[in-house]
Image (cartoon, rainbow, N blue to C red; front, side, top):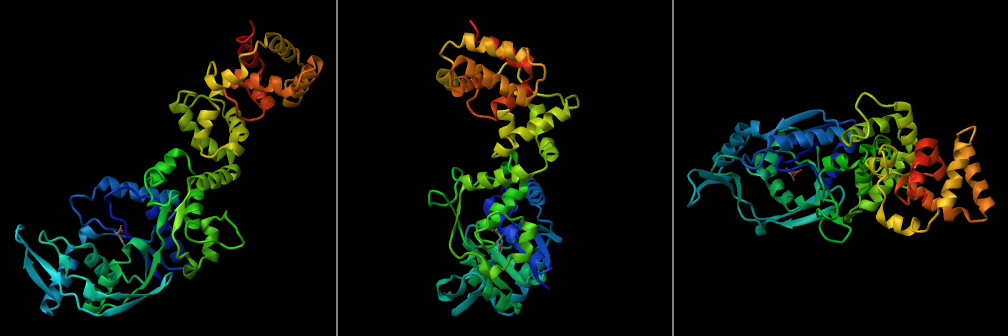
Length: 431
Ligand code: GLU
């Protein structure tokens, strides 16, 4: 049975790279009906923090990568010590006292030879271990090193496939030597390509090296982020870009993962998120938006017109890149007076349109039926009577009502604002 693991160190939050590694492990386990194991590599007692463990677990849950088993390395020190002792007894390791430290470290005698790794993604890679120094297994403070604990655990946990980032390639020969010394069978290896920033450099804060939990806070949907993480190193074929990870299970093949590095493109992620937002259930989207509106004091927690809110959400839904756009773009529907963007005002509200605005408000108030079609009809007949182009009035009215140059259709905006609020806002510009 396939058994794979994701092995984060809780010395920081789960980032894009870790999220992608977790996804590919989860996907492979599900594709092969195997097990997905989570191993918290918290051997560094100073830098590992419980809050990072929580953050990582929450992010994995949010992304939908449910694990079958979970282990903490900090609870397994006895096991690592036992195997280190074994290597000592067999003469494959030795003790050494560091000049400035108290205890003794246990060090692995690295055999010198050429070894070949068969990588499922990168194919064959050859290493010359004569370039590798003897390796510390247990540090003088009695804690195990990453390479040693990793090998002991991968073997003890019967991991069949080690799927991890390319940045670990240089560790793999060291680990292979340890498998051999300990008499453990080798797992298969698959190294995922590096993720670069759009500027061609390493992924940085500026180019998107943000915690998964921050993407969540920024208003990305888990499904969209999953889809994007998948595309970073694999394609379902037929130039298809939108694919649910649960659907990808059927199509996924680890040997078809890209060898070349991936480029993390926030614009592309925004596009994918927008596609998902268009299709997400408006009621669910409303649930995500409500807390943000409450926080802004735009609505009161248990006292708002949900039906009205859902229709507003539907109105904005096709345009949103992130959930959070709604609060920014729809603010004018919740505020007593819209926040007028000075650049928009400069562009569209400097000309005196008192007479046009006045006539429009009169016509609106006289409407017998106040629906989108009648509002449009009323507006069109006015511009035709005035002999002006629609746009000479559309933009100024929009800015007066919403404070912005962008947004949903003007007639929808008027409909949802209602005739009273619409007229009140236009009157502010009637001299
Ligand atoms: N704790 C290591 C890391 O976070 C795990 C590497 C591995 O998957 O072997 O990079």
